Image 1 (spheres, rainbow, N blue to C red):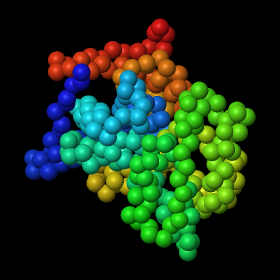
Image 2 (cartoon, rainbow, N blue to C red):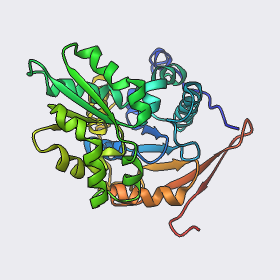
Image 3 (cartoon, rainbow, N blue to C red):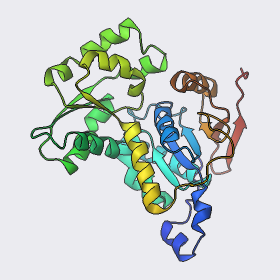
Image 4 (cartoon, rainbow, N blue to C red):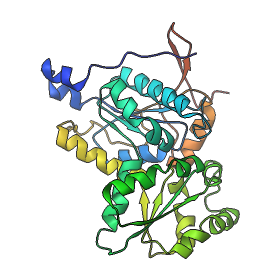
Length: 314
């Protein structure tokens, strides 16, 4: 069972009612992912937007999304978006590649807020980096579900008709990143096998089309060499969010009263299950576990239950 949250009023209503824009500027940015991979997107946003604070939801009870039907992924994504909207956010980042590919437009319809995915920004960044090439070559590595969706290919084709594109699925990269095996010899051996076709293709740009893959960036670089530019879709997303906030007049111009740290108590993290494991992986990915971490249970129409999770909890 789950809770359906009423969406916030649409932007048209806000403008009609002349809501003070300064009150919107100080609202947090919402981020959701099917699990822990979106933490790399959170890290990029934290770096590029030092005045902002964030609310992160990891749907760890229902991960992975890649094996679910399109209708199920869409429903999960809308529920996650509605939960974050109910927390009071000014913009939503969909840090899950599968949800970005399948549900982004439906999310926008349901919450009435600006929603940014990771696929579009990553694709546009790859095209931008190859704009001076007569015959640009773009490689994409991603999960099997993302490759099968052709989401990156379609996004690149929207802005470039001349790019030559190759896609390769690297499914083992996700568990290797989560288990902290980024620098192991076994991981390098697996990367060589996965990326053999990419090396032969000799791309100008390689898109890291899964939010886990930046954790393996050093290993990937060892295989493909220094001449290939890497596109981190989380970094590209953060750059795009910064531009949107500036264009919409929604950026927070007031620095926080205290020095910011990643995962500090100005940012709030929620998970739908396995908070202890989430904190452990977050420390691997970010160097620090979340200060404010709560589990969220979907209890049906009656309400939403949360409880705080501490690092010493068993």
